[in-house]
Length: 486
RNA sequence: GGCCCUAUCGUCUAACGGUUAGGACAGAGGCUUCUCAAGCCUUAAAUCCGGGUUCGAUUCCCGGUAGGGUCACCA
Image (cartoon, rainbow, N blue to C red; front, top):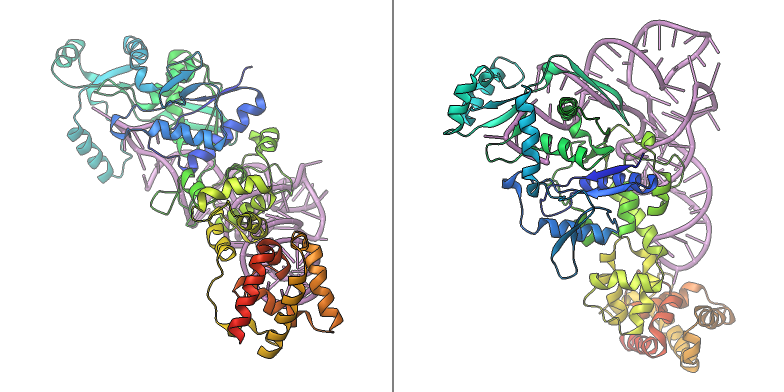
């Protein structure tokens, strides 16, 4: 069987991290099975439509490196087109496709016209709720005669509802096993709205059939409405796709992740300085675990290891500390060029034409959790911060000692060539030699030297600083420290 | 409230019905060390409760409890 999966984001203008979670599972599954990964836009609610949202979604997908096989495409010149032979992939452009299917159900008596106003429905639900019943359409319009329906259709707005039959529906969820729901629990869902647009439930069933979708991987919130779609499939005589309801992403309070509780867009995480690889690794292993003790997985590994039977059933809270830790792992693995490219947009103030900045990047990456950390950690390399001279003094020594050692080191470094600074082990050898010859403790020399070079009590090692700053800048900073001590 | 789903350290998770219930993040302590990171080592921390099936339940079944989801002309 040719596996075909689709994701169906609604155009809200950004990619919710929960959407990314679902996208990832679909993507992994499709790629592993050698199937098609399809993007279909579910924009049947005109009220929800946000201008430019589709472009933004496609851009994010590209940034994340999650290429799709079919669906809308954003061209280099900013225009939109499509690829794939099952289009159009935007539901608002498929309105005419849905109509005949609704007619078909109407003819078979499996759907009916309903003229109930919003007010009446509201009153009905209020009464049902007051009577402690589950709100459900009371089939008020089912009894209408054919003639009356035809007459009123000419003047009144109407919707088409599905007539849910007696009985119950069981479907076999690929992660949760068989699930049965009695039809007495299923509402007579509106299929066609009064504005002529289909509802999600109709559109998704028709499109999944026409686009030959074989597997539907989606969030758990869809579980209760799945019978509606299965029933529709049965009415049309179609086979249901395989459903796999994946666990929800939760807030720290275990509630479904919501916009109110901080940034929840994938784009937000990117702009906070998390790497794409981190995001894919982290979000892709929430509710899914390849069953090993490893924590770090590349996209390629996740594609290889993905297994629906290993998807968890309970919701997962995002642990931001772990995200930071993971991002740190990925940053530390970045080579010189990749690190530079990644950091650059996050540190616009830093002059990377200065080789000191490039070298500092290498040293500071072991301290960074996010790309945004570099703007601050690199700054002291490019301009010595002001500091009070007292911090030049090691806790086990005095100012006199600091001054003497700095003077001696200055002399040694002045005698060393540029090439000594270009090699950390070489420059370290020079300093260490001075320490041992004079029977000093490391702190007597390294502390004041390090503070002189960094201007801070906490920093990288003096050897790393010398390597980063180079001969000229290093000597300048030592000179500056000696002036402060004088 | 009805229905549905779920339940292992604080969090993410592992454990063909037989393990001292494992790993990771965060925490604590230590090593290293001129400081801060990084790294390494050690440590504390969990099977929701009650029944049943079984020689033996984290695991299978039932009940309870708790949490979540969902009950629109939104997806």
